[in-house]
Length: 76
View (spheres, rainbow, N blue to C red):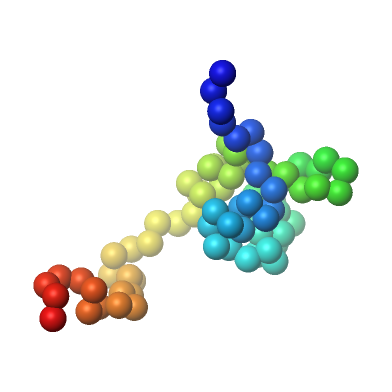
């Protein structure tokens, strides 16, 4: 039997992505991240979470800011 996750809680999404609780609920409220309710618990299907991530815009290389440039290239 395959051990795959069918759905995530909001807390699990927060831990996996670093996205805050308010931002997750905003995405749900605005219809960009489908969610289900089981009692008081909010669940996001793994397939919906993957589709949400794939729908995010790609970051263009010219907009990338490296906060630690000393870690790139040769050691100083």
